Length: 234
Image (cartoon, rainbow, N blue to C red):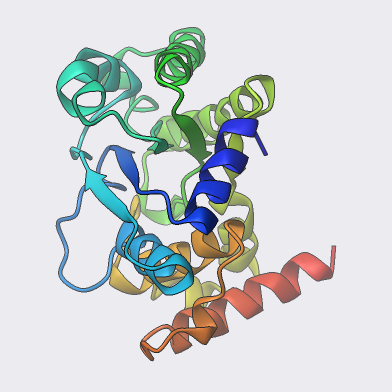
């Protein structure tokens, strides 16, 4: 964990107010009713530390790492966040976007550089596992390659990584019936899928939503336990 994020968590503990940004594409934009993964994180912080944070979502469906850089001033710098979740790469992997792996890697590093210059902690996230039965083959191959680049960039920049894909891929292969009921289509999770992502994100910050006064996490926590069991078998 980077010093910036450790300091942020220390700030939560001390009651210091913080601004938290979600920056990405359709995995980030809030366009479905019911809970979004960023809602889950917002509620988790409130549960653990009280109302000491402002969560800002500037996700735009269809966006790429190139697009994040182009709108950085309006949708990132303007808010001066202390923490940002960057979840990008699915559209970069679309051959029609003409963003190769070299540019994707450079864009991620530039995004990190700009946020670090603001003393903003960066959390890189991989995607959930796409459904290969409902995704064009070249784009699917690129997405897996680009998620490896996300992992590598997180390690190279000493950033926090939340690797959803590795957990979701095991679920897809071993419990396809559960997996498919979390997907809206081949490249997007539904409301239940968002909640599963949300409880995992909260846990990365040491927060157990199972202790929440809100009861609608039960199904998500059950699936999280299934994912944990699959991980333990490795």
